[in-house]
Image (tube, rainbow, N blue to C red; front, side, top):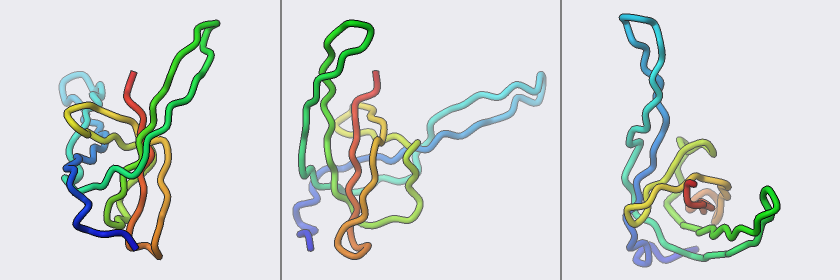
Length: 106
């Protein structure tokens, strides 16, 4: 089991909300705060990808947080003032903790 005292990074979990315009019926999508939680940075990986014949590097970060049931893979995370997309969610320690694998938004 992890040490809660190591959770020293504040992150913001964001969810997308669709709002309908009453005038013309169009929808506007915005990101809103689901929760602000403490996290522990537990890892970082960099991988090389080839996109349109160009070599690119993508860095992913793993963050450990207390277990929650309301996080979906399509949510976003604000970490150290940068916005990231969630690319993986892993339950650990018998649903006491979970790890979020995140990548910077392009």
